[in-house]
Amino acid sequence: MFYAIPLESRPTWRNPPWMTVALILVNMLVFWGPQRWEEKAQDRAAAFYVASVLPAVEVPRFVAWLEETGDKHLQDARALQKAGNHRMLLRWMEQEDGFQQRVKSPGFVLPEDPRYADWKSARTQYEARQPAPFTRHWAQSFEKDAEPRPITWLTATFLHGSTGHLIGNMVFLFLFGFSVELALGRGWYLAFYLLGGLGGSLLAGWAYAGMGSYGLGASGAVSALMGMYAVLYRLRRVRFFYQLFFYFNYVTAPALLLLPAWIANELLQHWLSGRGVAYMAHLGGLLTGASLMALAMLLRKKPVEVPVTPKAEDEDDGFDAHVAHAQRLAQGMKFEQALAQWRAAAKLRPQDQSVLSAWFKTASLWPGGEDFHHAARRIFRLHAHDEQTLQFQHASYRTYFEKAKPGARLVPDDMARLCRRFARAQQWGDAQRLFNALHRTAPAHPELGETLGMLVAALHHAGRRDEAAVLGELAPGLGLKR
Image (cartoon, rainbow, N blue to C red; front, top):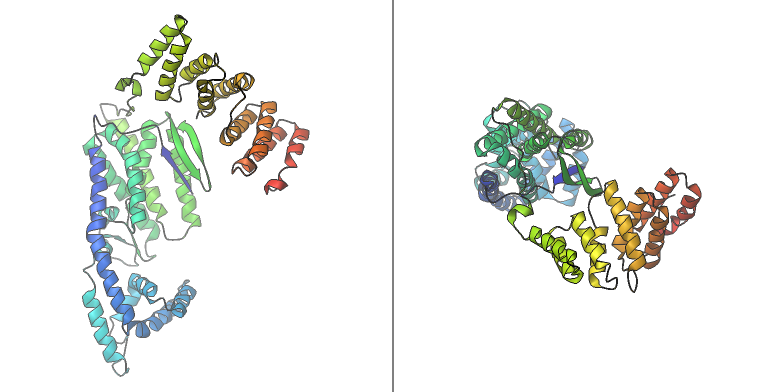
């Protein structure tokens, strides 16, 4: 499983992404309107079903039909039958059009069967309680020999199977949609969104044709937005939060690199997973969205502009004033007053290295003061991983470690983070001292094992095998394989 979420872009309310908001509202209204009403009506009908004679008559015949057709899930059905889970079996039966045709055939229960009259009466009452089909009617059918209904290629993208399914799609629709909407304008954005949904439905229809069941969900259209986003930002480096199976982290990378990663993920999931998720709809959306954005950027007379998130400077939050005031105070040797200004500026820009450096250097004049500890902590928690940042963090660490009074105040999370970073920077002595301090003060820290593994690997790679071997002796005690 792989997904990546952009973190740096954010909507601007000077030009609100109203079309994205409208699409989210339409999806929510469809799900909590007719779909939810249909679901409640089906629940009432199901309650009648399990309390009637219908399970005793129909469930054995359904299991026999699965055996007759060679269904690979036959054992699951037998287990449900043995457990008396008739509601789950009913839901399964309703999805099997072949069996439903048999139920409606004249010979399903013969008139001479002693249960025929009761079955016929209960079946008539059950069908009367069933609501008019909505979700199944407007979803994309994957049944064998299903009549083509092109309208469902689009309507299926506004239907969802559960609350979690809806919320997941809407979160990604918002995260990627507002940037694409600002770039294309509302009209083209809506057109490309719908075309992306159609592209996802077409590839899903080809991939799952004849496999039974049906497809629904906005994920094809949302994947199209992801493809548009990657092509729109191209080689611009964007900060993403990503998860790869059970590992997650932050990365700053060219946006276009995410497109092949997303495509490879959908293909892998399609080959490895079951039929519960239509990964080919995701892939179709990605390819359609990327193609549409590339075509738009090629053909439009006016270039497609990449949305730029308004910087805090543009919002006049006082950052520049704090910096200018601090610099004037420092020139006038009023360092204590300058310290307060640097602190205020750092609060507004917690990732600005120049501001953090000035705050830290000024605060070092009072090594026992809270500002010195707070500034150091901010520096140690910088997000960037480049060489310049690592050098800045290491130099600041050395200064802090030497000057802080009554001593350095490092929390376990900072120890683990700095240990891993210093290992990458080949600052072996400080990396090992930090690990030893972490091991001594927080032996149950959740990142202790990961930190040890990274430090040992880095030492071994650098040819410092003796040091790696010594540290490696701690691995069994932490429950790690060596």
